[in-house]
Image (cartoon, rainbow, N blue to C red; front, side, top):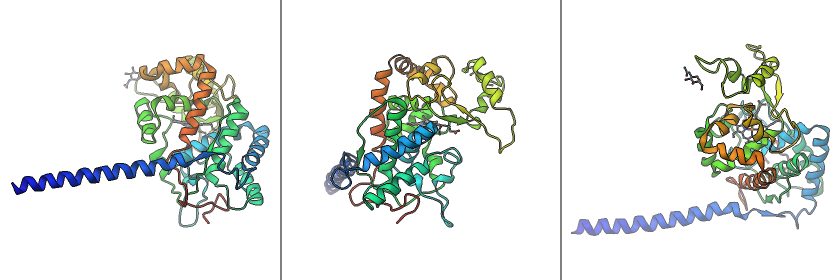
Length: 336
Ligand code: HEM
Ligand SMILES: *[C@@H]1O[C@H](CO)[C@@H](O)[C@H](O)[C@H]1NC(C)=O
């Protein structure tokens, strides 16, 4: 009898604890909703305009920087949340995220963030976080390269940790199949559909040959070439990406040969034509689960663009630091 009493008591305590935990979790995860559009309206009214001007100048000179900045937001948010950990330089004791193969040598746009930060520090010292600068810069790039405009929720704060190995466990490599991509995005709170929508960012920028040469020369034991790729497209890629080229020779090719500097839904049409560059691209149309999404977004550009904007905002809220968490860096490359 007393044992059943104790088990009842235990059950009651466990349930109470579970309730407390749940409410704590929902409280702490709602810190992401404490981001708000126009966060700097009082403290640094020209913040977004400063970033926009710097980004516009840079992207006008080199559209590839716009691709880099959109990708930078993704690589920042998936690793320790959107906390600008991607911007920290390595120190003697600590190699940072920048050294990971996911970012080195392919990530571009660091200098654009530096320039924006320099101008912001002159105007409003230690007010605007580096994490917010990345989020603004990604939006301004999407606006310039795709006419995609949206309000960026801000109020993120900067982290103090950046580890070389973190991207490996958190960013999807180009050879992932649909289930692996799905699982990777779901771990960050993003849906399968958001994964498909955000992959549309591959309608701009470039990829190094090493990210997809396996599809051209060593697919599997019976098929040297990936049968899900248009053979004419493969031939063209082979002329740019030679087999067994020396390690230090790794050319780049355009990710979208149709409209290379336009952030648009041509990406999905390319996939339907078996002209996706990466395994992670082509799997979106070879997998029954997502084939219809590709067909829809290939056909309706404004539908895709609206959803891309929403998905970028959602991605921008992943595990953010707010309030008194983290810090506002003086220099985006160094912790205070
Ligand atoms: C779905 C999983 C994804 C995988 C596996 C993936 C992988 C890659 C790879 C391998 C490259 C080429 C890097 C190189 O070799 O130079 C690349 C480029 C790029 N990615 Fe992704 N990516 C994914 C999702 C995303 C997302 C969600 C975004 C942004 C919303 C994004 C934006 C970009 C952009 C803009 C480029 C071109 C960068 C440049 O030209 O500098 N990617 N991605
Ligand atoms: C190679 O890939 C093709 C096409 O995906 C497949 O049909 C075949 O079974 C694979 N062969 C081996 C040995 O894995």
